[in-house]
Image 1 (cartoon, rainbow, N blue to C red):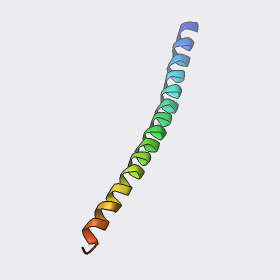
Image 2: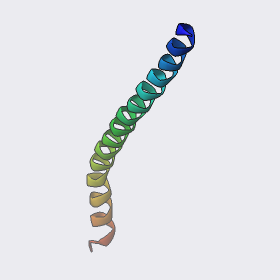
Image 3: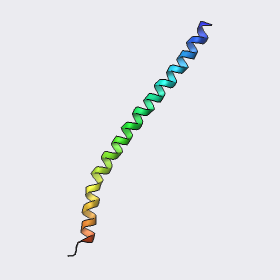
Image 4: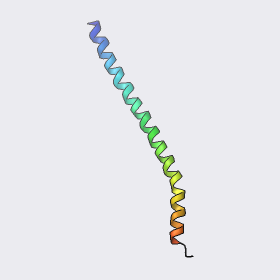
Length: 55
């Protein structure tokens, strides 16, 4: 009976740790994606300015 309880608690612990780990990884990926987009926007703005300005 003790072994069944230990296995059950291990499964619950694994699920909780996995879920919180997935949330942390997801937040990190979103943050890095936003940083990459922000770095790319200045070059896009320069490109559009070059296209729209009259020489």
